Image (cartoon, rainbow, N blue to C red; front, side, top):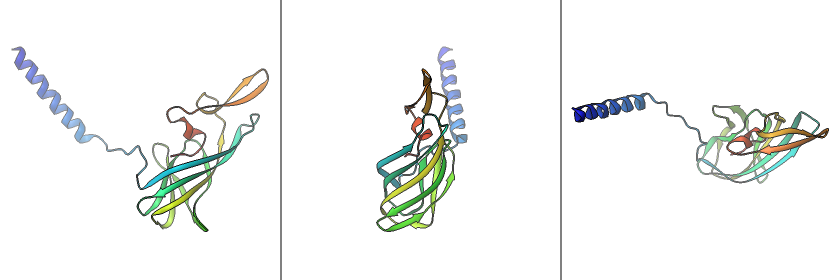
Length: 160
């Protein structure tokens, strides 16, 4: 009797798992491998007494396969300008927000395979909770601290 109950339990579990996996949504949480970052420079204009800040990041990328879109992560920032450079050539990008903090810089035509610099200018607000880039006060002075564990860096600047 115990064997029959154990066998039936296994059958029910198998059917339940196969049904749930059939209805599971295939979600992409990672940026596509068509573009690979190789180096990133970040410049932040921060005033501890101001609620807002601005910055620019330049990310060296390799386009591995021709694409119209370059993806990057950011959360709660305003991208004011984005473009690619390759030598003397500049390619304007139109930025749109996607799911899971993914953003997409789209060119008018395909971006050829090769090495580029992704330039992103942005604005943000200093966080009041202790993640990303946040404000702390001590003895009447304001200080800016950072907490970039997990995925909190994307709250301070765009990144891969």
